[in-house]
Image 1 (tube, helix red, strand yellow):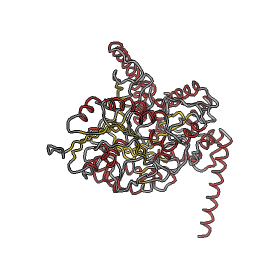
Image 2: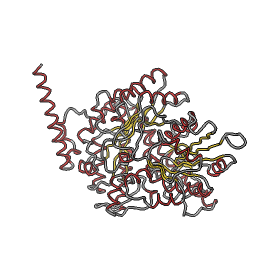
Image 3: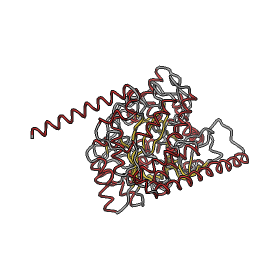
Length: 597
C-alpha cells in the first residue's frame, strides 16, 4: 500500500510495433490482416499474473495492448498515464522482428526521454543474442539508452520481470535463451474482442507448439524457439478457443511453424471438431505445415473436420539443389503434386511460400520455374520472398563471421528487399525479378485458371477472387507484401522515421489524397474486372469439364518423366529416380506380404 493507504498502481503497456515503408512512414491499416501471436501470448500471461495477484495483493495492475499495424500508438497518453502520481509502469515493445527494430527504437527513445522504463523483446533481440558472439550496434545502442533487452519466452517468469519493473529495478538484460519453458498448463494466448476486431476477418491467433526439429539455414525459429518442440495440450487449446467463442470469435490462425509435427495434432483436431459441432460455429482455421503432412494418416481429413480452411506450406523451391543449399532436406519435389492435390480434394485452400535468391537462381531461371509451377502444381496462392539473412538464422551468423557485406538497415530485412549480394544476380536484377514474380504468377490468364480449378474441385471461385485482391492487389497497388497488408492504408504525417524530415501539412495531405485515388481507383477496377470473370467462369458449363496437367491425378512415380519440373536439373532427375526406387520397393514389399498371407 502507498502511504495514504491506497493500492500501488502499476501500468503495463504492451506494444507490437510495425515498421517503415520505403518513404519512412509507419505501415498501418484500418484493419491489418495478420495478428500477432507474441502480443496474444504476453497479454494472456499478463492476465494470469493479474488474476493470481503475483505482484502482490496491494498492487492494482492496469494492462493495455496495442498492435501498431492497426492502431495509432497513443504515445503522449501512455506517458501521461505512467507519470501520474502514485503510478509506476513499464512499456514493453514485444515480438519485435528485425525489420521492426528501427521503429521500436524510435518509440523507445520517446518513452525513455520521458523517463519511463522500456523493454524490447522479440526475434531480433533473441536471435542476435542466441547466435552472435557479441551484441550488434543496434542492440548495444538500446542498452546505452537504458532500454532493457528481453531474450526468450515469458511463460513462468514474466511476473519476475514485472516485479523488477514495479520497484524500478529492471536489469539491462533478461536472457532466457538457454531455458525455454514447457507449454503444457501454461496461460494461453488471448486478446480481448475489441483488439481482435481490428484484424481483417476478426482472426485470433495462438501457438499450439513451439520449436522445429529441422535445420533450414534461413530460419530463425530453430534458434529462437529451439529445435526441441514443445506443445500445448488439447485441454489448453479447448480452453482458449472457448474463451474466444465466448466473445464471438470463431476464426483462428494456429501459428505453429509446422503443425503437422505437433505431437498433439490429432487430439487438438478432434477437440476442435467436437467444439465446432457442439457450438454450431463455422470455424475457419489457418495452419502451417510441411510438404509431407499428407503422408500422416488422417491428418488432412481431421484438419477438414476441425475447420481448417486454409493451409500455408513451406514449398520454398522446386529445385532440389536450392533446397539442399538451404538444408531444406525434408522437402521432396516428387511429393508436391500428391500433397497439393490431397488438400484440394478436401476443399482446403493452399498457400505456398516460394523463396527467390538461392545460389543457383538467375532471373531467367526464376521466371521459367514460375511458369512450370503454374502449369504443373495445383497451388492456389503463391507468395514470394527474397532469401534474407535474418538475424538469428544460421545464414546471418555465417555471413557475419565471414564479414560478408550485408545492408546495415534492419528496416529492409522484411523478406521483400535485397539485403546482401548474390553470385549470379546484381541487386537490381534480384529485386527486379522479385517484383516481376508476382505479376508472372498472378497474371489474369492464370487467375482464370485458378478459378476454373476451384470450380472443378467443388470449391468456390470467389475464394480465388478474394485472395487475388489480397495478394496480387497488395503488391501491385499498395507496394507492400501481403503479410504486412490490411484494409485501407493509414499514413500519419507525424509518424515518420527519425532522421527524415517531417513534411509540411499542405504538400503531405495533397499528395496523400492523390495516392489514395491512384491506389484505390485502379484497385477497384481490378476487383470489378476480376469479379466479372469469376462469375462468367462459375456459370460456364464448360468449366465443369476443365482439366489441366496440375489436376491430373498422381497414380505413381512413373509419371515423373512427363513433368518438366522433374527434368529441370540433374538433382531433380536424381530425386525422381530415388522416388521410383522407393515406390518399387514398397510395391515389392506389399506383394511379399500378400503372398505370405
